[in-house]
Amino acid sequence: MNVNLTEIRRRSISVAQYVSSLEQPFQSKFLERKQAYRLQAEMVKEIGKSANDYVIVAFSAGWCKDCITNIPALALIAESTGLEVRVFGGLKKDPLSHTSKWRIPPSPPEVIPFDVDKIPLITVFDLSGKEIGRIVESPRRWPTLEQELGEIIKSSR
Image 1 (cartoon, rainbow, N blue to C red):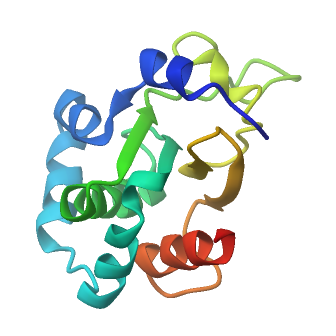
Image 2 (image 1 turned 120 degrees about the horizontal axis):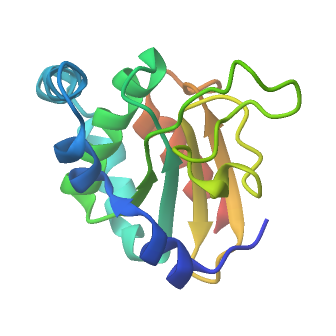
């Protein structure tokens, strides 16, 4: 998948803005997780070496358990490395639809071209807008989010 990063930046918010914009009790849960999470310093250092070469685009919702686990860690990674993380938030399921999982609005229309099925969806793009990897819900191949992101970035070089 290729995206227009300028348009993504215009239509999304930073991960810090996203966490700040959450309503209670969701914001408290995200902030508690962020405060409790301990990043792996060595992997963060590796991500930081090439942080300016990638943009992360994530889809999230305050009610989502996996988002509460992973988006705060993503916020810490962004703060520690300078990695740009953009978020489309406020996803809401559409229980009345037989054809679409997400209600648009309030869910952003980008859920369709990004083929968002489960959240969080964390996609990694190079600066040309080419997708180089994605994490759906939680890391699958590595124990931590920073390890999985680091491996995606390393394998794209």
